[in-house]
Image 1 (spheres, rainbow, N blue to C red):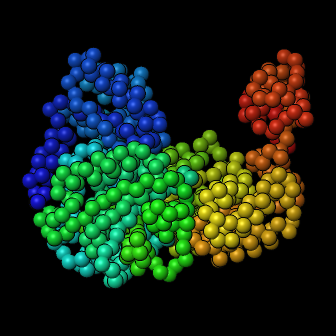
Image 2 (cartoon, rainbow, N blue to C red; image 1 turned 30 degrees about the horizontal axis):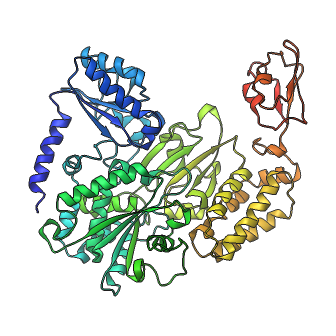
Image 3 (tube, rainbow, N blue to C red; image 1 turned 90 degrees about the vertical axis):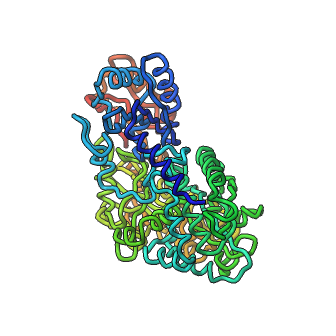
Length: 617
């Protein structure tokens, strides 16, 4: 089947959608939007247009990446550009639709931006700080299209990369991926084209493709947002990879905690079947391919390739020693190629636009773009895609807007729970595979958790290590016992029971675990400890030698007092104390009963700044 006629019809629909005869209203209904109230906003839109004399079509879209100001509502009014409105709530829908669609007031005060141009006082959406420095390849369609509308995908060039690939030999397709310089976006950064060639040249009567969608890092949501917002970009990449290595069957391994992503993937796969893009004789060629979704139970270790394969086969998800590598003996003992969600989305873009467009971005060994999820102590949380080589400072303070409440930046944790914490002194570090490894961290799948002056770096190391300890499969001794010993030492330090000898123990034990663990979970687990030791040693010394937590996070090392001269007896702290540890009469200075105090810090937070009576000691 040729997609020519289908693509023409899709383009006609897309043009009518963007240059409509009647208003088009889009509500962002990815998980970030849903969590912020998009369902109520969607219903309010339906209710409002049924009550007012408004004839409009209502659609859904995915995550634009500006998660800090969800829910988003986009309106395309005839003769006007598409305008995105931020922080919508159900109560704002009626005045917005009434003012704009009935009275020609576009409500610039609620607008995030107009698509591709300014509109009166409304800025160009792609000139706002969150979006201006981005270069979107993998995320090219997120927030733009209705992810459940196959025509939207086709109109935006979907499956043109597959059409091009099927006109080449498999080796020519692999050549193109190699020329692009694409490296795996799942963490290890292995050259994608080289991995494909290894799998293609491996001996075997059948081969498999696996899409790793088992995103489990705290603070990471790149894969989820992409699958919810543009599943076809990923599916097209999988089809291209399958043709290149000679696979006829594939698996998308996705954690069951992603129900919306699973729903939209299921819809997209059905659309492929209905349009002759799965099954036999795809696009009238000899290429045949089928795809299955397998839901994982949420074990972090199953993001590792061999553990994932074991899980797909119905076994306990534990890693195995390598070699043999999965490209030689993977799923069911057959040659298997595994790439993650973002990698597959890049593949489809590379085949559609050519290797040169991708390789022209980035640095010498880190080509193209990378998606990151910005989370933690940052003003503009969300999903971004930037050229490799951009600095941490440009991401955190340019795109992310810096730290809320005028707090000081302390560190950024990259690479998930097995990544490292990078301090302020390295803010100019270029973000690429080599530079992050040199700093003691790594790219990982793309999570960035920003930390400020109120974060204790010893506690941060303990927190991330507690995650890896809980998620360890327990198969190898260094990870099973070594990480638990690290956690025990860190817990003792945060409780004021540390010893100077702990410095050497943490360092030597961390190095040993890194070198001797079986898989990436154990090998990376010490990174938060080793980087915080290297960059924030003074905080460890304060905990151990002075029994003091500078940030005030470690409750065992913190106490609070009320300065009598400053206390006005307003009673705010007394009323907010959860354990009734504060006593005093109204209008007279209060005191804290240290025997009852749990060091929660509520009193410090609620004491009016003009008084400043509560102090942390």
